[in-house]
Image (cartoon, rainbow, N blue to C red; front, side, top):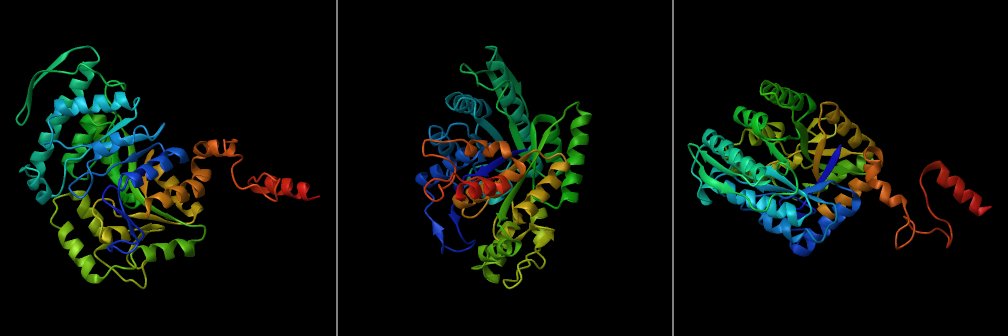
Length: 399
């Protein structure tokens, strides 16, 4: 399993739907989150895209020198940029970061936003455009390693002698991630991307989606990697986890939820409709599990006001790890997570769940550092540890 975190370039808060408990989402804060994710052992970070966010390419590039191993999952937007230029951007970022770029293809599902950006094509046509975009983008990057040029003529896009003089570090190109729930999205994934992502639906629904994408990929002689996008609310007791979920939406009102759902309902995204169907707009501030716990420890409350990924894993470290393992059993390897606020929750997830699922990510914490052993020294001379062996060591020191 590979675990990713999230840079909240659209804002961050302790509570959804209100400015209370919000914090300034500026470069200093993005840097804090990125450094935390890098230090804690996350594989990489996802940067969101759209008019509600800071630009992901500029933001990600500004964080290269602040991090050491962290990878950046950055959006490509067919129709909003030309594929040959996008190939040069990707190659440059990959080179400057030492091969730490991952690509997130985003076709877009908000017609109002796309119109504001100058793109006036319907859902099916966007996927035809995206297919041509990816064909050019992939070929230009691959050809760049051999000094070759690319010609392409499609219905939407064409290039003549497109050439990349500074090739990417990763061959043939930085890995392509993509998520979508429509037939067109599944076909595109099966044909041209490397990692297919789903939003956090119940395991049975995820299994059906993966089976469909696998079958379409197999028909083309391809195999893909698979991942999931989720929020997480993990606490040391189940009661504390559900209290945290209640607090997260504790400042919402029925009017706020209704307004958000009306806005999200205008999108032509099949995935967004599936997220909305999970919660159905149900909102009871006194019982946040009623109608929103759509599977044991899978909660749809985030989607009441947030577009895109709208479900969270809620529970103890063992319960959250158990559901992650259930998804893993379906063939999911990439877990792209987030939590509110993103700085504190990165630490909380890593400290509580990594020991259960990703002990290798915690290995650095078992070694002495420049500031001494991991944890506070006890009684001016006892080095803390974990588990029964640690208790025995403390007892021996006391005697």
